[in-house]
Length: 251
Image 1 (cartoon, rainbow, N blue to C red):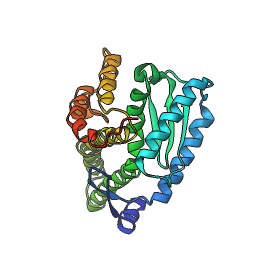
Image 2 (cartoon, one colour):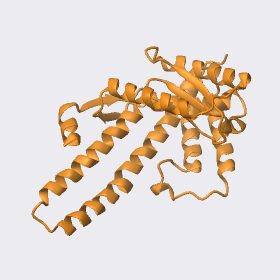
Image 3 (tube, rainbow, N blue to C red):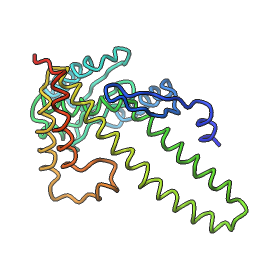
Image 4 (cartoon, helix red, strand yellow):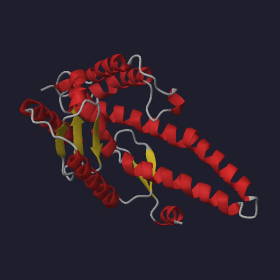
């Protein structure tokens, strides 16, 4: 009922900056920003912030340059380094960013870090978090409608059909949507890092190193993954670099 009510009352079309992609948004931005802030504070409570002054300074210096390049001065940007071996980073709605120190040996320098931060910040600028919630609500609405239409059928048949539709929606809709968002974040991230004064080719170099770091690890086939394969990302980034170079302002 919640999904149907939201879908019917607050659906709105949004346009992603630079790519121009249209997206359906069922979540008000105010709610998205509050969810981002709450999640960020929860993560920081459970994490150990880095005490390495050089690391903290680098993350904040590069991060602020990327943030300025987005033009979202209304965001309350915050950049923190978390002491953790995982090679990861994230940006939550509203500009709340964390970099895990385990990724720094792969980023190597400011330009490599800018590629990571450009990608993560792009998720927030494109409102991918709110879009994911909206996409899940749409799928739930479709499944609820199917169940309602089959109320007079055998309960076991309804359960089987719903399970099959749910699996099909995951593989056929939710996972491709997620991969498209990751690719879009790569695309936007190139533009933001270029505008911030970092050469976009550093993003390609970063993903070559990420692929090397991931070599030997088992991962699902691309069509069952939330992210594009490293080879796909490298190929796409190479195709977008000429566009990003139009925004490049070396410093």
